[in-house]
Length: 84
Image 1 (spheres, rainbow, N blue to C red):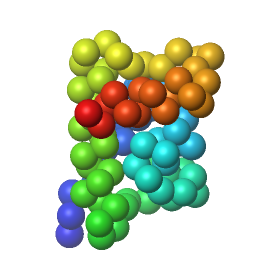
Image 2: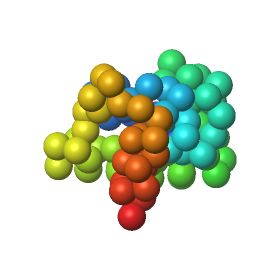
Image 3: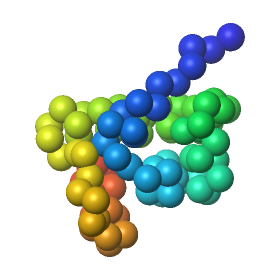
Image 4: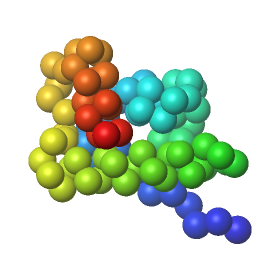
């Protein structure tokens, strides 16, 4: 059995589930389920783990948490910056 993935960086960063879904390249339903305790399976597990590491690094750098008034375009720019 695999170790459960800790999604607390997403909560600490105040990233809405819909935005986390975009970051991971999945639909919102999957992200909502993961944030409520369901674990990602297969290839998603590796991708989600990598994205969570990016979020944790951004928290350490002070890039996150997100401001409450963040617009989708601003989030998209942040996603690109995290991935590079």
